Each structure stands twice: as C-alpha cells, then as structure tokens.
Image (cartoon, rainbow, N blue to C red; front, side, top):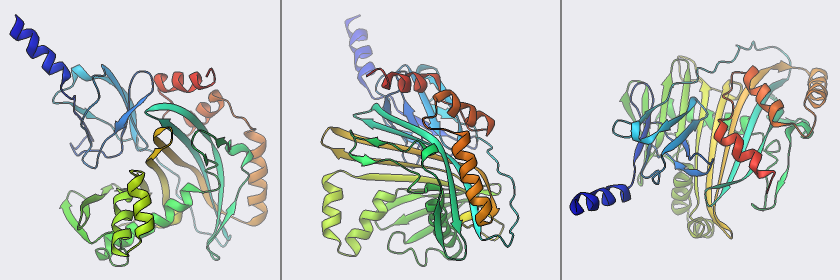
Length: 352
C-alpha cells in the first residue's frame, strides 16, 4: 500500500502533457490553454504541444481559426484534444474603380501578468487602405474602445496598428515565400520544405520556424516571429536589439488566415483572421498579450462612402461597448463567443 501510494504521488507530480490537433491529426500551434478560472496555462508550440497543464482538471482551448472547447484532462486519450475548423467565411468582393479598400474588423485583446488576466478589450475597427497610394486611412477610434493599460505600460489602441492591414502585408510575404522558396525573406527564413497534404515547413539554420498550411481556399501561416527576428538580429549584427530581446526573454508568434488562389497569390484584401501572441519579462512578472482579429466586412469604396461608414459605426457602437454588445456582434458574424470561464474572468476585472 505504501508503494502504491508513493507511485500515485509521483504520477500526480508528473507533468500533464497535451497535444491539440486538427481533424486530420496535425498539431495546431498557438492554441491558448486556460484553466477554469480563466488564467493562462500556456500556448501550444509549433507542433500543437503544451508540456504541462499543471494538474488542471479542466482546460479551455481557444484559437482564432477553430471552435473553442472545454475538456476534462483525465478523459483525454494520450493527452490529445481535437479542434474543429471554425469554417469562417467572408463574402467575395469585386474589384471596382473605387480607390479605398474597406475592412471592418472585430478584435479582442487579452493581457496577462504571471498567467492572471489583468486586462481585456474588444471592439470594432473601421479600416481603410488606399490601394494606389499604399496608405492606411484610419477610422474612428472611439468605437474601437481604445484604452491605456497602465499595468503593461503600453498603449493598446490596436486601431492605431490596423492589425488586419499589417497582417495583409505580412501575408503577402508569406505568399511570395510559398511561390519562390524564400527569395526576399532570407533575413528570416532560409528553407521551405513540402511535407505533402498542403503543408509547407519553414526553417532557418536555428530550426523550425513555422508552417504554411492550405485549407481549401484558405491558408494558415504560423510563424515563430520572435525566433525569426532574433536570427535576423544576429545575422545583421543588430546586437543592441538582440541583447534587449534576450534580457526580456522575448517571444512573439502569430497565425494569419487568408484567402489564396490556385496560383498561390494572396494580397491585403484577402485577410480573413489572425492571432498574435507576445511574451516578455516585465517589472511585474511574465507579461503575455494575445490579440485576435476577424474581418467581418470588406469591399472597395470611395472617400465619401468611407466617411459615411465611419460615422455609421461610431453611432452604432458607442463607447464603451458592453460585453453583451460585443458578444451580440460576435454571434451575428459567426465569431466564437467567450467561454463562460473567460467571461467570468473578464467580469471579475471590474471588481478589482
């Protein structure tokens, strides 16, 4: 009995490893794994693995491109969790002589300190992009719920960053990477390997950097951007930036989802959704920030319509938007609503 009890104690102390996979059995990177209180346990690596869920009985798994779920860890076979594709779709847009591309996006920002949720923000961003001038036309930030997060010492008015349009530029580079094997991106990536089944493996001399995965007419590009950036810093002798990143134990990964044609072409107007994960060592502990962005409406418009659209959104979504308003918008656009555990954690922020 003593031996059995000892074995049980050892087993309970062992790390509980999970792997999150898609319906084809491939690992899903950048899945946020949270406990029942809404605290961040961690995110899956490029192979969909999280080495330790820290003895948690139930975990919530979320990813911008898959349906979220809550699972009991003890019920899993070999620690595997299968997530279903969200099947998120956007209407086709027709190229017109109008000069501006309009992309309306819904975003969520989660900020954690030492795994505890400390800040949440969500809103609707009206984004405009002049296709000829290659210039961003900013929309109103009022309805974007832009705010300052003192705990992070950083402005998280993500409307100013226009995440969807930045993602469009990044994904254009990914599309070129698919077509020409990395020419033009060699400061970050050096090798592109075809693994079959629509999967391309991205590497540099320091190892695996990510994957480009074809899913029907969509592509998922997942990159360990922090690793790629630091490789570039080393390669170009950018020692000051490299030292700062190393001191902060900096990490940054992202997943972009875009429409792509049969020739591997994708451009800024083909943005569908993305998620960005940042981590760094701060004065108050380990800082983590997760941003999810979904395109909910898009098309080509003229300047007059663009100004009208901004006014329309400002009137429809007055600051501050409530959680109920935000979730109603998410539901009407086929975006997964917040899991009850996360909603409780967000509501708990107001009580602190």
